[in-house]
Length: 282
Image (cartoon, rainbow, N blue to C red; front, side, top):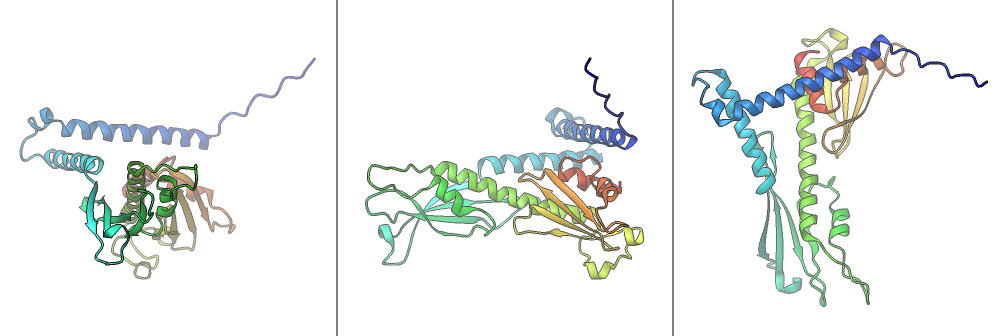
């Protein structure tokens, strides 16, 4: 007679608290989304008095909606230009790609990619000049979507539309992550205050106070948290700001501080939820 496997252990109190916190965060996100949608509706705006603070919230949501629409439809344009170099290939003809970025309600300086046709027997395009940040994998995208012409019977197809759309997405993701770090600093009360100025004696609780939040890599996919007592945390986020991993080191035993990590994360699945927790003092 085969022995039955022992039943799984019951969930601990910490597991139940973490599960409930995750559900609370999801419900708060849903409530925020529904509230913003209702306040931006034209029928709702007609019912809001002119002196009500809700009108300011409604105006902010409308501005956000318009910015999102612009980012989706009008931030990628093509233009023709001419290289003034008399020895330029293809008689100096240039096809330009302009990428505009809206970050933190402001339009940044556009990015440009200039393409030319250096191949004498082919109309294939090649990246000639660009102003894309080095951390964006431009060469990899060009190799994938704008390959050089094949030799002999081997022909390569280029897809300029997919190259442009993918490059725009990567640039927007990069600036989104930059904005996330800025929002984390603001939520933690670090905006405009250097680590040396704070020195662990700010408005927090002494040695348990966050004194610095900064990117740890050029792609801004890893964020470093530093506390006044010497603890260090590393948060790894995905392309769109989702939390992939969080580790805090430097607890009482000098190893991994799981309690501080749980307090900082609180069941959040994206960095925006961590920002709200820091802003609310959770």
